[in-house]
Length: 321
Length: 283
Image (cartoon, rainbow over all chains, first blue to last red; front, side, top):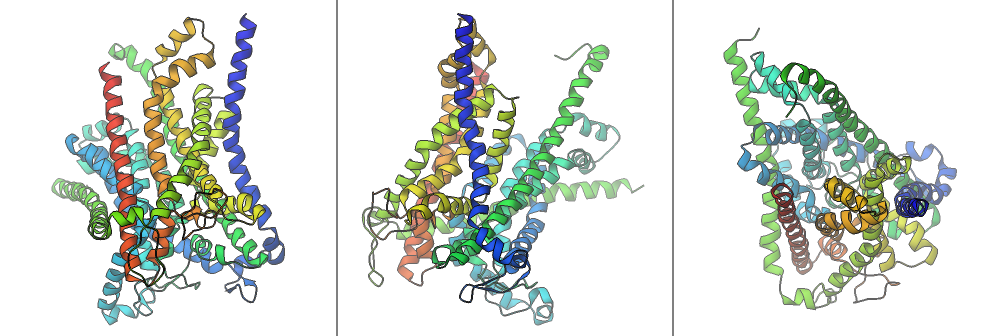
């Protein structure tokens, strides 16, 4: 009887386990399939693929450097804009906000993540890009000589992409940072207050305690920015060039996939595009793993410390409720 | 040592800056919603839901084919993503410390972070290239793959929230672990899981990138899963980057439909979660 029960339980474990294993298989399958399909391009170009800056499907020359540049440049700049705002939101919502406003404000900031990318793109084309163009035209010529503001004011380009990416990244970074701050024990802040700290100094103590998790939340936002496709494709201008200028139309890895994949006629072009997909996959894999590890390592020591502290408190203060 | 007044000033300024950053984030939200609603409402009419696209140059027409396409592909995706997600979530929650559970949890988080366009490239390789044909099937597959990790993690979280006493009661009555989970624990977590599934549906209905080269697009109404099919998002994209004024108008209408869908689901999910929380704390 017991053995039969145990057998059925084993069946339950294996049966459900098969589905869990399926997720692992899908992720491994994505990596394998992208690698297999891009073999043609990997063999033909090798490292040159990543160092060349000419992308010309007609003559069969594929150098991916402009796309990598565009992806990294737009993501880093978007992060520079989004991080202070995201952390401000996280601090406000977890430490400062009146209790009555906390839920509605949290809901509204997270709504930014719910809006589909295509809607951001549509809004970008018809509202943001004209506004950016007006800003570029209005910029005094004394500033226009700077390399980051050089080039004709066309509106579509790096600046529009960065602004839209920043808005899209904010909800991800701020919600994780908020969770991380929530996990900081109250004793950290109380200790700071007890030493005569101001409100900001107490928050700084909490931020310092939570630093690994905060960095994890920023990296998570970086991962989101790297892979964002539609909104960026629609406003960045899609011109494969390596320029420092914020006004210059540029290109990203995700955008070139979106634009050229269905039009790619010969096998080499398809393989080259899939290789870009492979690298995008590899980069986001590394970035996401790093951010998860940081966020986990942040939560683990707290649990461990809490477990060791309770007996000490129990001995002196009569035990936890 | 800084003067106390200075320290207090810095503190006040930083507190205000934090509040300000919330406003800074809400401004684009308000702007986007304002434009989507004001421009979308102007273009939204009955034809949008019932008419097919008209040839370039003619005014009017609608998104009927795209709405059918989106519904069909979301349906195909959900048909396999919900069972896979729920069952794998059950496994991870029931056997949390095993190697498989750790790997599956990691894989789900990874899959959640994989750019949607990369999922599109993957599905192109396994479901489009072998058949030399874009298809609704491939589009649904791409959407389903994106949906799995959301359902998995939601199921896991919600099963963990079910009071252990419920499970122990079932086990004490002689139920096997599998039976206790399927007949007692899972039903208790079901309302929350359904909420999570609804949110996941809303999210994948708004995806564009994985459909571009799996389902492609179709100017005509199609319900054949082996044929290319249109979707709300891809049609909005096509219309948005077109040079025609009337198409831009309809793209805004499409965006309004998408945003309404997402907002309704979010608000409903929020209300449902609230009710669940109250039930759990209030008994």
